[in-house]
Length: 151
Image 1 (cartoon, rainbow, N blue to C red):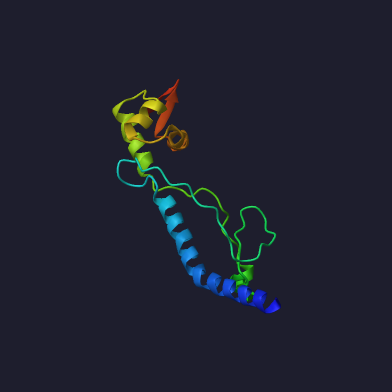
Image 2: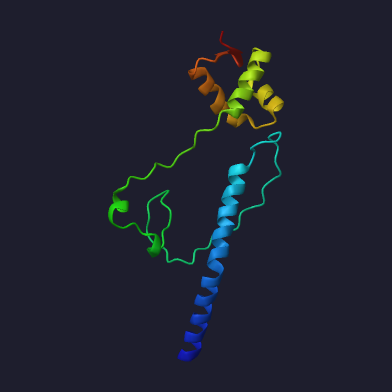
């Protein structure tokens, strides 16, 4: 019985070793597709397929929130361990949507966020971040529900 279990463990470990690069590639491609969602084109994109549950072949370890799992091979050593990590958060965009929103506000002073979202073909929640940023930069001003360009 012990020989059978050892044989099966060996087969499973060999298969895990064989599949690991493919799973890693899948996750990289999935992240790239998510990053490209809504970039370019008319802003409309095909609905994303639901993501499968992630399964890790590495043993589970305790980690803090937002901390990625690391294998023993990827553990820091020496001077690299003292290098501070960049804090996770929302990345700053290129300003393409911001410039587009500013153009529409200049063309139609008093435009509201729902009207702007419809004209740009994007969801409103994104504009609730973009327009206050433009307001802080002194490019637009909110009057009532509408947005107006600053001279």
